[in-house]
Image 1 (cartoon, helix red, strand yellow):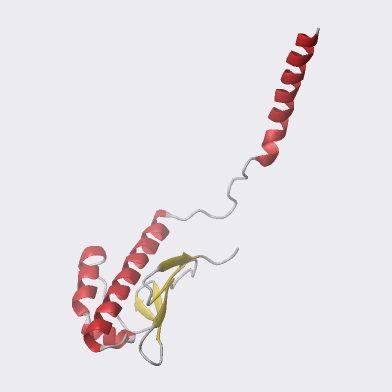
Image 2 (cartoon, one colour):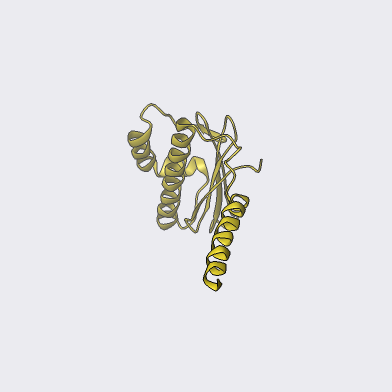
Length: 145
């Protein structure tokens, strides 16, 4: 008799947990998923920010301070040519803010030249941006829905 109660209690507990589990299940994403083109553009943007960070460090070593975009482009042309050859051979760098078609750059060099902050943003849809500074850490951000 006692054995049946234990078995019955166990079965009821398992059934109760099985019924309650869907309450804790994750809801499917309702936001729009990124297209392959958006993912590619964001990946290329991260690579470009990595190239800018490398060029900034090189400029600081060579000239003693970080550089604004026009100077950086002139001083470190080989780094940007390498990025273009690898990722976007047809691309031509321009002035800020839209340094390449589809990419908007904001690069602020501190007054003393010992730091910088940058944001590379999707110029068309503005659905993502890549951020960095003199620490070399790269962040990716998306607007709140």
